[in-house]
Length: 123
Image (cartoon, rainbow, N blue to C red; front, side, top):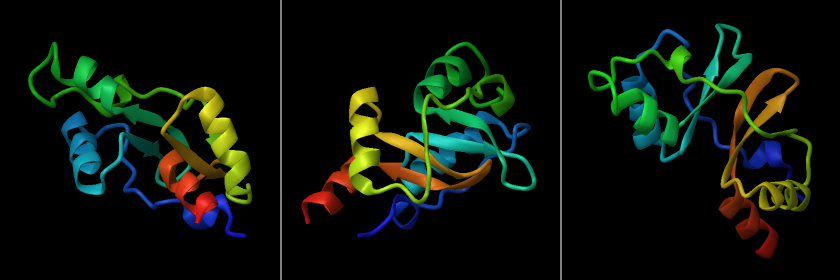
């Protein structure tokens, strides 16, 4: 059976000093709702969500001028790359999350979606 790490989608991380417009562009081009924020060694510092960008990044400021570091938050849950898809899907379902960061220690691996996990489980 395939592991969560093998299913994880590699997404372009943002730096804390990037404008939220960069994070929004990653979301659009890579079709995700969360963007990892990483240091130069790809250690996860946090995430930026589509909601945080909409509410904090554009609503009250000049369009996209807010820095990612102002909106970064710790992910509620992360997954290990060696997890089984069924285990990860159960965790995501219980937490009502559609996308979750996959970490190997502190290093960013990718993002996995609940829908992809369910698709692989039911295949």
